[in-house]
Image (cartoon, rainbow over all chains, first blue to last red; front, side, top):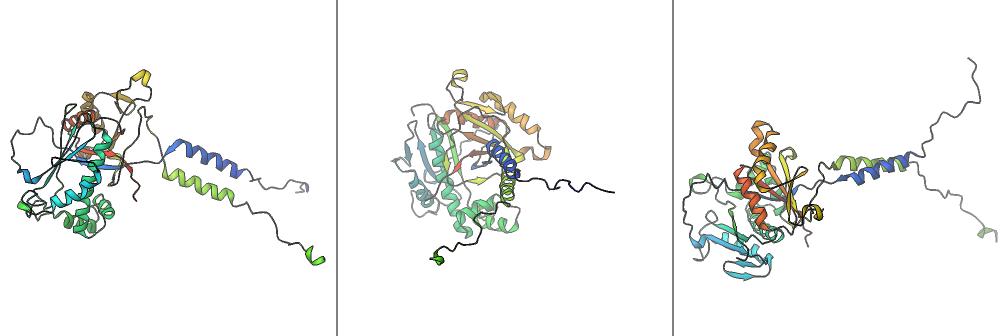
Length: 198
Length: 153
């Protein structure tokens, strides 16, 4: 049972632990990217070949027309516009008109925002304008539901929560429109782009 | 004079024994919050900024399309191209690609497939609308334009 009394200290030297951890840390820092999965949602219309070709007449007053040409210049309701940020209040006024101004929309349910681009329009400009249109709608929904715009966008993506669903129904006016439809739909029509130069 | 010579008896060193723990915590943070990149992106990606962003709910239902000018312009030319998984495809191949992506999902979830398009700022709408048309034909009608969060004033 006799043991050598001069045995070494059994502790492991842990001073290099920090260096090892640093190396691992640097490896993960370099090889990974933080996932960026946020953006602007748009639902696409059905396949054009399967859609019936019916000519629906939409009164001029219920259309809010935005056009962008190949030089990224804006034409809103027939007038040139420089500042993209002006679109947002204009859309709110248009949608919430409720038939007061005969040139503007009948009701939020009938209001349609039409966005037409050229084939030469850059994606950046398109995103900017789409962002403004969606922003205007989210602002209005959030107002109706009594929440902030940011909160509205969060709750829309998580409708499993009954509280979120309740607020969503208030904001969109689900079942309050004609034939039990949504009273406050977000109707954005993205038209087929024109050929270069238009 | 002696009272000026008095030296403080406290130790000068900072204890460093907790350093590895701090580094490990950082390490775990990065390991948890990051995802390893699945595909090599071969197109330029300067993602536009927007303010009204929404989050993707379920990552498993998302397929990605990357659109932009190829990084290797001498090999692929400078016209914007569409990258799906690891290859360049033409707009006419999109219907097939969507079918393949749908096959990867469970049958009940196939109609919930979301296409996330990562589009470079300078790509023209013409190409994007061609892609949109093909997606409509393929009945993949949930579309997300990936954007960055604009810094709000």
